[in-house]
Length: 132
Image (cartoon, rainbow, N blue to C red):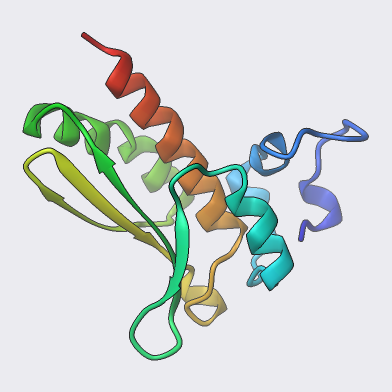
């Protein structure tokens, strides 16, 4: 699942922290079914599906208080998305943000880059939802 250069110096990173590595150093390969199953355990509410053709995605709908919070969530991810050059397929309707993640460079399959972006989205959503 991880190339040898992508793991941290820790001997046994926690399951969630396994994906918290420099996103530019992630292995660019599709995850196996077992790797994807393990990764999804770290991502509450995320599911996997096969979209058009054989395109594999992980997907989630985020719900916020209103449009302003949904937009702020999306905006807060700009720097991460731009710096990793890994862009989500997402849409916003009022307080909802629907996300599909896939890696085009590995044949429209899920890769470590998708898991890392999903974790970043989880953090951003938690921060946005905790604001009053």
